[in-house]
Image (tube, rainbow, N blue to C red):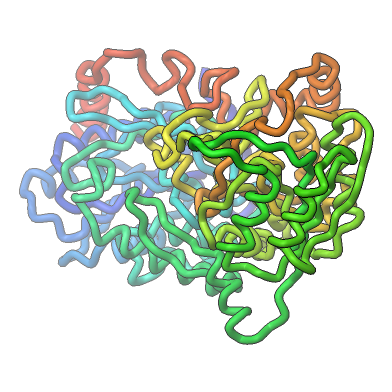
Length: 587
C-alpha cells in the first residue's frame, strides 16, 4: 500500500515535491543509484527530480543525463561551466515547481518512503522545515554509523551541523530566506538551516534513517581531509548567524571535525570591556563543613570549592551564599570568611539533610540575578566557566515567535577526581542518567555526533554545577522538598522546560566533582516513585536523545538492526534493481 498523500496546496501545480540535486562529475554508477532511489519513491508520481549539471566533464555522465532528461518527471539543467554547489543548487531551486523542496547529493540514496514520511510529518505539524536521521553508505555497499539525532536543537546547530541530511522545506520558506547564499560553498546546508531556523517554527525531526550518505573519497562523509575548506566556511556561516541574532560570541574550529566553538564567554568579556554593569551571580553552596582526602591530601571541601572560584574565575562579580548546617565547624566558617571576604553570606540551617530545602533557603537569601547552584565537593577547572554559563543564559530567544525559548539554565561538564566524566548532561531514556558516565573526561563521545564535544540542549543538567536565571527559578518553585536527596535537579530541569525555556550543557565550562564525598549516597524508592509519577512521559521521551537508541543507556548505543539495513547485509542486489528501474524508464 502506498503512503497516504496530503492534498496539494491551492494554486500549486503538481508535482508536490521537488528533489534538487547538483551534479558535478560523480561516478556514473553512483548517480544512477541516486536517480533510482528517487524513481523508486512510494510517492513517485508526486515527485520531480531536478538535476543541475554543474559543468561535468565525464562523457559517460553526460550521456546518462541525456538518458534521464527524456523522462517527464526529471528536469535536467546544464551549466556550461562549473559555478559551485551554491550556484548549481540555486539554479535547481529556480526550476523546481514543487510545494516542497528536498535536497539530495548526487551520489547519495533515499529510503523508498523517505519523501512520503518526511513530508507527511512536516505537513501534520504545519511546519516549514523537517529533517530525518541518516547513516553512511560504505564503498562495500554496507550501511554503517547511523546518525540518530535530537529534535530541533538551535544551540547545538550553532556549534555543529548535526542535521545535514535529509532536509525538506517548503519552497516559499526557502524563497523567504533568499535560497542558498553565495560564498557559503562547503557549508551551504548549514547556512541554510541556520537561516531557516531564524524564520521558521516549528522545525520537525523524523527519527528514522531516511537518507544514506555515501562515503565517497571526495565527500565530507569520507573525512575532513576531503574538503578542509568546508569547515572554514562553517566558521563563517556560524559567525554570520550570530551577528544576525545579536549573539556576540567568537567562533572557532575545534579538534573535532564539524564541531565549532561558539565562545559565549567573549560576549560577557565585551560587556566588561565596555564598562557595562555586570550581573551579580550568587553562588549557592550547601555544606556541613566536611573534610576528606582527594589526590593524596586532606581538604575541607567547601573551603576549597569557594577558593577555586575566588582564585581562578575570570568572572568576579560574585557573592557566596553558603547554606551551613548547624554542625559546621567554626574553623570552617572562619576559613570561608578568609577566602571570600565580604562576598560571603552564611545561612545557618538545622535538621536532617534535605538538599532541596537547603538550596531553596539559599536562593531566598541570595541577591544575584543568576544563581550558580554548586555542590561543596567541587573544584573549578576552567577559569572562564562562569563567563561561559552566563553567556549561554543571556543568549537570544530562538525562532521567529520565540517558541524555542531562551536558555534559562546551563550546566557544566563535571569530572571525577580521576579525570573521567561524571556529568555530560542528563539523558531521560526510560531511566534518569548522566550522559556517558565514566567515559574519559576529554573524549568527544560516540561517533558520529560526538555529543561530549559540543554545547547542546539537554532535557536536564545536574545541580552540582549549573547556572540558572533567578526569575525562572523562583517562578517554577525551585527544588521540591519531597526530594531531599535525589532527582531534585531532574524535577527543577523539567519544570524549567515546561515553563517554555531551554537547558544547555556545555563542555566549555568544567569543574571537578568529588561525587558524594560530603554526604552518604542513597537512592530512596519513594523519591523515584515521586519523580516517575510527576514526569513519567518526559522520563520515557527525551527529545534530545532518540527513540532508536537502546533504552536504559546514555551512550548513544543503537537498538539492534535500526540503522537502515540488517548487519552484514550488502547493497549490490538492491542497487542493481534500482538501477534497472532507471534503465526501464529511459529506454
